[in-house]
Length: 136
Image (tube, rainbow, N blue to C red; front, top):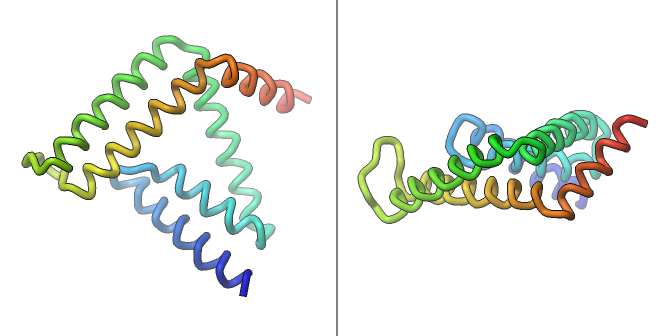
């Protein structure tokens, strides 16, 4: 029963994330979440999950080290939130409706949270610890 539930939830998250890789939304996050759920029961899901984790840490590290990347990321996050809010509010925009707008807002908020965390003391310590583990 547990394995079936894990399979259904993990597959749903992974498939939704794969769709959101080409649609506006937090696709990478959902793919990683789906692989994490599947990885609790299936060894084959752990390898791509480790790769996704490495890529996520690489991205966070790049944003954390470069002030320009952080500024551009915050501008991008702001743009996502504004365009998404306009879509949710019903302003007619090409390819942006209420559902797409909601995903854009969530994506922008997630991006802003990651950039903010990467520049806090806790985020810097976590990035340093991850680099140290990677170079062992």
